[in-house]
Length: 373
Image 1 (tube, one colour):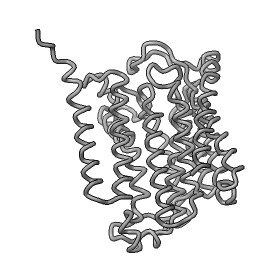
Image 2 (cartoon, rainbow, N blue to C red; image 1 turned 90 degrees about the vertical axis):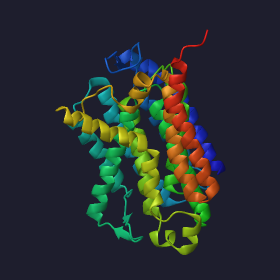
Image 3 (cartoon, rainbow, N blue to C red; image 1 turned 45 degrees about the vertical axis):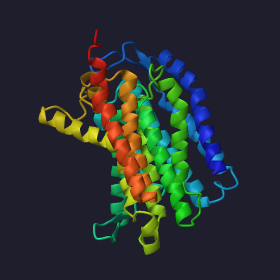
């Protein structure tokens, strides 16, 4: 655990230190987000913050490979370099898009190249759980296609949720922390080696997000842009895929493990819970724009975070905190129920659900009520 904490601090510290440099660089080359009708900020903000995140991730990975525990396994080092190369490619694609506004096809092509690098490096989904409790083994071609689709979907989901100051970084940080908790707890519960790709990637993502948030929370001084959103989505997908590739489903479904942990389906359910809000937002946006006869890639002001801010009446930081609450509830709720399946756990999760509903729907209306004379 000490080496994971060190990697966390390295990622956070490097990202934070690079944040100011990237902000000034973006302003100098004109990579600035203009004021658009669908935006909620009132002044132009530099983007390309994803370059700071990339620097933090790269430094953390380099340090991890030199540590006596995390750097000991050759397969872990191989995964790290593959993830880092794929992250570099997708961050560059996003960075170019931040500067010159690439068309959707070019962006998709760049994301596909990055996903292909990750798949070729060995980060692939090898099996899927079936409703009857068995698992379906994927052929190499099926594994490559499914893994690439997951990576591309995750990258775009994070990009869709990046609409308010600090929103994407905070949601991803909570999701990564929850995934780290599950992955690390799983190694303890199964008495396995605690040095895994999934655990390392999630702790690096959490650290990079923590280091970026001081620059990005309301009022934001720099946006992560597509470079950061695509990178964080790819890293979350890499942790998901590597965890399922590392686990033996036959071990996961033994009776002893089933009593303490959910079966093999949980590694796939958890990332869905972690990114539930972005995925729901992505699905609703595609349906909404398609029904209106528009391209699914056309931007609008109907995302979930926009509705919280503009329709329900939450303040800008208030809407972000509500999204944090729901993201943390869904991700840590799944982890808590998966690791500690007791009535007390279910009751605590239910209580937080009630609190989240109250904070979402009731608090803004109470602020709008006139004070009695």
